[in-house]
Amino acid sequence: MVIAVDGPAASGKGTLARRLAAHYGLPALDTGLLYRMVARALLDASQPIDDPVAAAAMASRFDEAGFGEDVLRGREIGEAASVVAAFPGVRSALIERQRRFAAQEGGAVLDGRDIGTVICPDAPVKLFVTATPEVRAARRHRELAGRGEVATFAGILADIRRRDARDSGRSDAPLKAAADAVILDTSALTVEEAVAAAIDIVDRRRRV
Ligand code: DC
Image 1 (cartoon, rainbow, N blue to C red):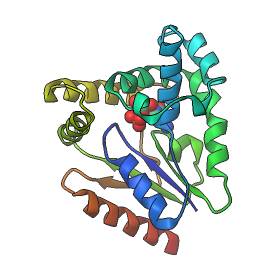
Image 2 (tube, helix red, strand yellow):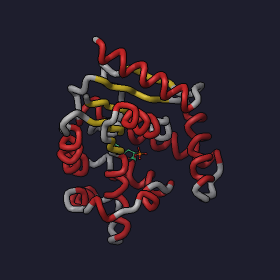
Image 3 (cartoon, helix red, strand yellow):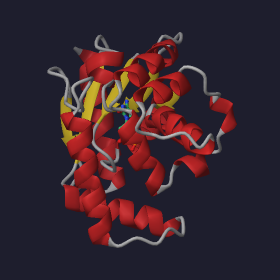
């Protein structure tokens, strides 16, 4: 069973994808990390992140094993990842890795922005996880504070709005819910409530 989990930044989709993977015993891929790796690799090589040709070349040659998750999770890398993710050459270079992961025997859980629409359009279960920008900013604020990063709530909210606009407004594989996705708004839900709702959605889909 392939479970596609899409949604905007800090919607809770990563947590839900990990919890669904544990619940159903499936491997999980956070596809945002791939875009973050491309951005990190460009910065490490002192290359500009806004050059589509350099970014596409990096996307086809970077080594996934070369990065600890810690260096990929920072605020500045999320922003840079959103920039490189808008380049069609970067997206096409990353498609095969993601489809290969999804094609594993038994299935997989993938989370990102275009899993249900582009990477796995035939996934039997698609979730689109969302929450208001203010709730997402508050979550990201707590997460960054936990990692020792200093940032204001207003600054993070501005980041989230800018990323939403870039991720939804790009012409190639923009962030949007697949027509057959179930929308899960986590604004008023605790993590445990959101996990229970997601499991319920998957179980219902599996029965039809
Ligand atoms: O989910 P995230 O915040 O780690 O993703 C970082 C950026 O990568 C995000 O702003 C947009 C991009 N991304 C994408 O375009 N497609 C995906 N499947 C996953 C992430």
